[in-house]
Image (cartoon, rainbow, N blue to C red):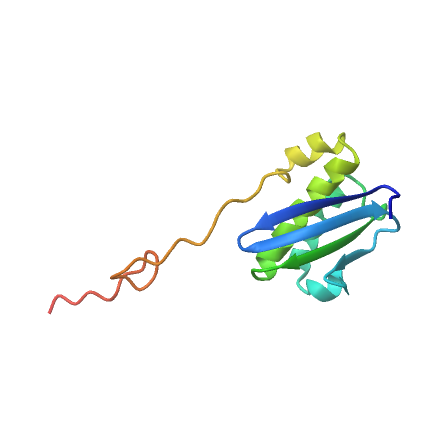
Length: 130
């Protein structure tokens, strides 16, 4: 497994993705399933593919990702960042391209905490004047 494979970690919301990239035919596997099986929504598939599309490397590398925590959207975001970072590990020339599409930034937005005396973080209980 020494032949040119890179590992990188991506995170988004509460998801963590460990991504391994090696030269191959462009197969993408997430948690031992094909990309299409794991992320059934095509918008999420596209999000995961974005780093490969931007660097024009789709079909050149095989991607194996293990991701856990969070939901579909967060996991897709985590895998996307993982792939971007792994690509930069592979070839530093990709950095500018990925940076251009904002693919190397960890999206730090998290769920705001619920406050006491309120229904949710910002939603209040119904106010009754009488």
